[in-house]
Structure formats: structure tokens, C-alpha cells
Amino acid sequence: MAINGNDDATDSSEHGYIRRHHKHEVRGNQCSSSLVKHIKAPVHLVWSLVRRFDQPQKYKPFVSGCYVQGDLAIGSVREVWVRSGLPATTSMERLELLDEEEHILGIKIVGGDHRLRNYSSVITLHPEVIDGRPGTLVIESFVVDVPDGNTKDETCYFVEALIKCNLKSLADVSERLAVQDRTESIVGV
Image (cartoon, rainbow, N blue to C red):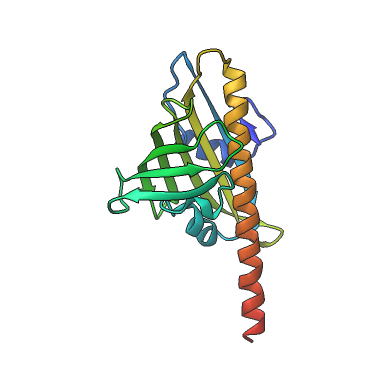
């Protein structure tokens, strides 16, 4: 679900998290949005995938590999190899924020052979209960320049489509791992 600040159907806690963690300074030639995904897996499990700045291919289907220069810390830069089918082959991304307690990851694209200029994103994870089980509310927001020849709507639509695909994959992988965890704990009894 994409949120642009005018969605009354969205839970108020989602809006609260967005106001608290997903503030982007949006200039006139940029677009921005926030997307929400509810995942039927506990926060610690989902975070174990999201926090791996050095292994985005664990859940991002358009990433084939990644190389991090130096230690994994704020300011680290990774080179991401993009699978065919997208208008890019590489992206250089810097780790801007990694908060292990609050479950927040922020990145900024600093180079690559694509049109996403001044792209910055924040992803936050929040515990919730889904169908009586531990679940995770995931919110990802971004801001990016609108490329010459494109509209704000076109740019937002493209980036939102990529993020939605990544969030669906994150949910699929996390939920599969959660089922394995529950099965292993039952088998171990």
C-alpha cells in the first residue's frame, strides 16, 4: 500500500511511524512516497534479512550480487549488480543509517548506470500481531529526482513498483523462514 499522506483508511500507528521515521526533504524536481507491508513473521526474523546491507540479494529479486567496500558500518558503500530486465546493471549505495534497536535502515544511491539520482530510502520494522501471531509492519519510504523526460507520477510509479516487488519478496522469504522455525520447534519437542 502506498501512502502519500491522504489515506484515511490507513491505521493511525502507520501514520505515526511515517511521521517519526520517514521524513524526506522533497524539492520541486523530486517525488516521494511511503509503502507499507504487513508480514506474518516476527520482527527479529524480518530484520535479520533487512539489516544485511552486504546481502540485499537475500530478498531483493532484482539484485544478483553485491560487494561491500571495507567494514560494514555507517558510510559503507556497496556495489549492487542488477539482474537483466531493468534499465541498469549496477548501483552504488551508501549505508546512511543502521539502528539495530529501532530496526531502521537508511541508504542513499551515490552512483551507478541508472536514472535514480539523489535517491534516498528508509525502511523501518515494527512489531505487530497478525492472526494471533507475531508479525511485522514494514514501512519503506523514498525520495528521488524526477529524470528529464518523465513526470513525478511516472517516476513514483516506477520506484513504487520496485519497492512493492522487494517487499513482497521480503514477506515471502520471511514467512517461509517463520514456518520453518515453527516446524523445527514442533519437531524438536
